[in-house]
Image 1 (cartoon, rainbow, N blue to C red):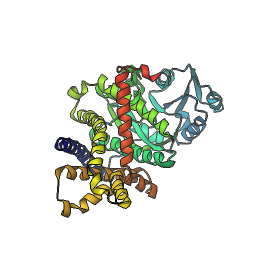
Image 2: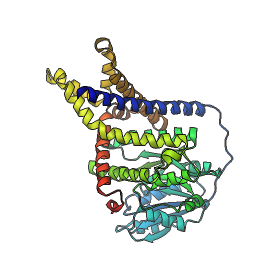
Image 3: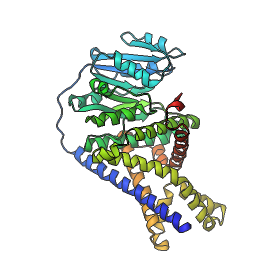
Image 4: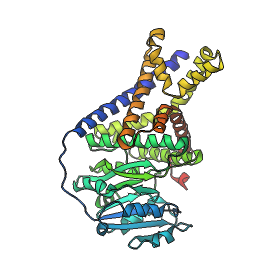
Length: 417
């Protein structure tokens, strides 16, 4: 039994390392290409409709509008539209205090229907959808709309940074968000295909949205769903570095669980809906979908395997409280991979642990590069990367719960209500 579990663990580490190596190769290609002189596109500043769905956002909507109007895009070319999704607080009153900002009042039917109301009411071909709790940085609108000068591009997504990195959850999410943004930017730069889009900050070609019937209500991940729909129609979906928005993330464990369960169930629905792309899609798209499915499988299998390995080796590391503490620290941080490298002369080389150590160190390196690209280095960021492994365990646990909820719901959308 032990041999079988070690073989399974080795297989998971091999798969993880293979995906990380693929990401590293794409990253190296991207950074090398980025260092070369690039052709500067002609100025492109078309009229843009900004759609902001809002439900009980009186705390954030004012700051969101202030940041948008101060982002540097010509105000005469902005059609700003807030779609109130049946708020019961003062959201509508705050919006009405901004001259020139249009307010569309809807019943409480959810974000997807609010987005579709914005698509119907927008005046212009280019539609920038942002969350009401997202604060655009200067230049964000100009940067996100520029690639849409190419008619083959249907959507461009930006970089969502964490606006409230307070506490452990905040800093872990900050590292995670920037790593995801780096993955999107590097992959889309090489293949003109972004692995998903950022729902908090994406600009669409309105005519392309109409071709696919706009946003759908039958998944809990409308941003992922619409990206795959656009790719199926032959459009390109890109990610850019210069369009940055600071977005607010859950500050409590309960809030994070609710968010990630909804995200994961939505992704599962999208995988089922677009499963034909695993066979019919182009190789980069097949790689993206396959890799995301692998990470789901990894999350489901890794927790019991990690618990087994922890207990398997525990008797050899339980001589004193200090030894137990150091053993636990090695499991919960990068101290583990570094320690295993240090012990190679004594322990020898075992393929399972070689792959595991390499995967751990490589993932940390990619996270570090991502954070240096989009943010200033800090001690808290370094600590979050060093102790990131427990956060991955938390994410795995939430994935397991999400899959259970998806199966319990029969794959339908009733659980969203």
